[in-house]
Image (cartoon, rainbow, N blue to C red):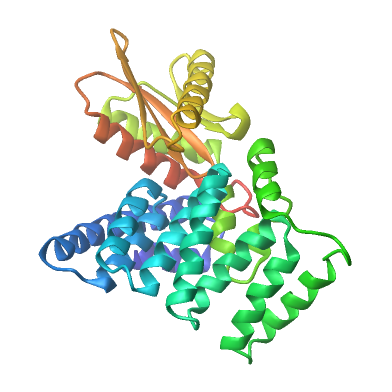
Length: 330
């Protein structure tokens, strides 16, 4: 890590060095995950809950984060931080799929946190992010007003609040239910949450960084050889192919697009959001598809390779394939 970070200081556009740093950070996070899980098996520890939930969100493991945050609230029902964590997890889920029910769950938990402790600034910040993103400037301005009540010497928030309130219509009404339903039906929101102070992580949740086909092919070659994966493909929002590697590329990327669409339809129909993984097995071997931020990635491997190993390999490929939005290919 020290060598790679030193190299990035000298060569900030070196995509391979950046991939090394991302890979090592991810490996370190997984090691810390194991340690924190052990702590929570031994005792109830609020700090361990908060750190583990944050790590799950950083790794885009939203289902695990949700399960743990719900457990945190159950064990500490009167802790404002517990409801803030659960609200943040629901908010992260919302900015991935735009399901209105996730937004309502976030609103409920963040308001509950504010009821338990009126000075819970994070709750008001997160509510402000949501209201700004869906286009409810008055609601957003009210939450920012609460932030300034708690921290009156915050010029960045004060300036942003003024701009937000200027955009509000003089006599216009803000129907949050309508705005959330519209966003879900059209799969879009009017404002990028990354423009909100403290909302950058949710912008990255939606966009995930550009997936570089060149880096994808390089990462796929290494992981594919180790796990005997024959074909890999990444699919973006709307079924747009992003990258593909291995044999019969055109036919496999078409198959990946269909699998991604099927998993999303199943998630909506069964009312549980996005799937953690989607697997099909037959004489052709095993095909596994996993969500990864703003895309889904699929791979075909022999049935002798476990689903867990394939899924972990796919997550590693995507992490190593991310390029910064303003970063040009070497």
